Length: 131
Image (tube, rainbow, N blue to C red; front, side, top):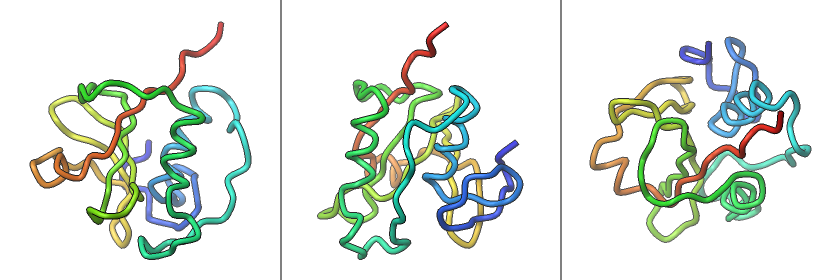
């Protein structure tokens, strides 16, 4: 459904376009029906300090922080630069892979190799759905 979706900054529609946060937003809508809040505009560049720390803050508010066990279905936040807060996210898949939206590439499944593992900042779980 999401794989192959083109990269579009701040978008969140499968097959049409999304960025890494848009992928999470779209999965959230599939799980819960609607997003928990409006997402403010955010910069595309890791150097954009206006959004610094906002991804982690949102994850801590809307998701459940988990231990470091990389289990399928968990949301993973990545630091793209060592000294900066996380600015990229994806969802873990079986067989040490994750799905994410990559600029100029779109939504892809990537192996969670040592380079990506070294960038992991934190892991979260989607909250339990109420019946």
